[in-house]
Amino acid sequence: MALHPKIADVTDRIRARSEGPRRRYLDNMANAAAEGPRRAHLTCGNQAHAYAPMGEDKDALAAGIAPNIGIISAYNDMLSAHQPFERYPDLIRAAARDVGATAQVAGGVPAMCDGVTQGQTGMELSLFSRDVIALAAGVGLSHNTFDAALYLGVCDKIVPGLVIAAATFGYIPSIFLPAGPMTSGLPNDEKQKVRQEFAKGNITRKELMAAEMASYHGPGTCTFYGTANTNQMLMEFMGLHLPGASFVNPNTPLRDALTVAGVERAASITALGNQYTPASDVLDERAFVNGLVGLMATGGSTNLVLHLPAMARAAGIVLTLEDFADISEVTPLMAKVYPNGLADVNHFHAAGGLGYMIGDLLNAGLLHDDTKTVAGDGLERYTQEPTLKDGRVAYAPGTKATLNDKILRPSSDPFHVHGGLSQLSGNLGVGVMKTSAVKESRHIVEAPARIFHSQDAVKAAFKAGELNEDTIIVVRFQGPKSNGMPELHSLTPILSVMQGRGQKVALVTDGRMSGASGKVPSAIHVCPEAADGGPIAKLRDGDTIRLDATKGTIDALNVDLESREPARADLTGNGTGVGRELFEVFRQNVGLAAHGAGVVV
Image 1 (cartoon, rainbow, N blue to C red):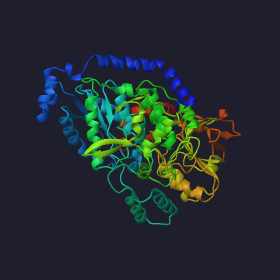
Image 2 (cartoon, rainbow, N blue to C red):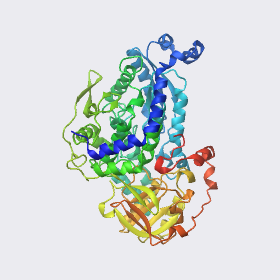
Image 3 (cartoon, one colour):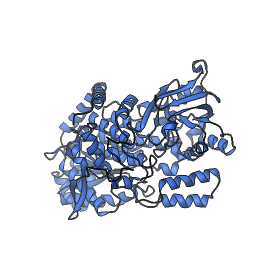
């Protein structure tokens, strides 16, 4: 199928816009690759330090003729999605030995859980942890002893930070090994109803806790389609996972076999062999366009509107919000996974999952099929389904038809003809809105504004009965320069209650919402942020705001914003407590949200 003209146009303009930085990036990668395998440049003393604890692998490492694979792990046992990684290093080392290679844990990176910090002070470190992860991975790989890298990470900022590192070390091959989603627990819509009842004061904290524990109940990624699972989709659409690897449950024979297959593939695509596939060849403009199409077709997390531009910049590629909007315009919404529907990712996977979706989108001309991937040339490989044969991964043709059209539909008969995100622009700046979970009747909201400078102030006003009318709630000074741009997901139960009472309600903020949010219309990432004196800082209580996702506009009506002085907020309290002192340099140097809110790229 010929490539859709709009997809081709967006790709061409990204390529043209990125010509300078991409050329410099590729030149740097070519120069690094030309130096040959990394260990060739180490002295005997350097190498002895690196190999001293490696036991039976020491001789192979010292000989230097076998690939050595570096493992970058985000393991901890506080994140359910990352707890399975505890077993991976032993599994990887054994698999490497079986193919005549070696593997070492090059380093660990931090992995915080937004579910733990949601609504807490620690959430103000969340976005910046992406840059810390990239930096920490860089330190691990700087020892210069590795011919390929395996990245163990799943959740919100972890995968984007690891991709930034993989791009930076783009002259070596990189494969991402996921852990998989936890098995299904209490349905997400039932959990959300319990949260709303608690917000109304109708149930006890004990009842709330019981529901939460029944939902988040075991190892693996949370089963809703938030940022973590959107990350896994991206790694498959962009060719950094093995085909079909994303949504296989942890601690199962197929999951382990996929991990072993990833190790074997990493060993076979180093510069020591004939299938050299550096990460810089995989991470080109076509891969990022494929990732954008996947984001829209699945109704994925708004957090990727921040992460994808930052990831791309690390590879010398410049993405803009216009690219997101134009791809959304021609990409149909093919999936309904919570919060966009009632199903979870396990149900999505059972219905045909990513393999079916990629095949359908390829047939519709909405994906580049000529990309390089860690599995080889062409995205067609990612339509196949992994199975077990004699304990090893074998691939079979994937399904050509959806197995549940209430969860997954063909692009010819989608849930919606457009993707799940809309760009907004107007006299309040630019922002984005996730529309995939919002009823069309709520895509336009016009109401008086109520201005807040913190989540707690919103909650207090709600508790005091002050938010009983149609209201657009503005929560400002939540951008990256103000306080690290925390998610405001803890407001979702309140906003949902207001909407459920029949009120017109929306959120406008220079902060973020969780990837699991979406039923309430929310204009997020509004830029310029209030701390930069952006128009959002000039709003006052009672100003009428109109959000229109159908036209892509966000405006204060009948207001001369130019004549007003921007509000100021006392942000001194944002610099201390729970480690915030360590991140002052990040707050001072962070880029615009529209550019990915990056510090290191």
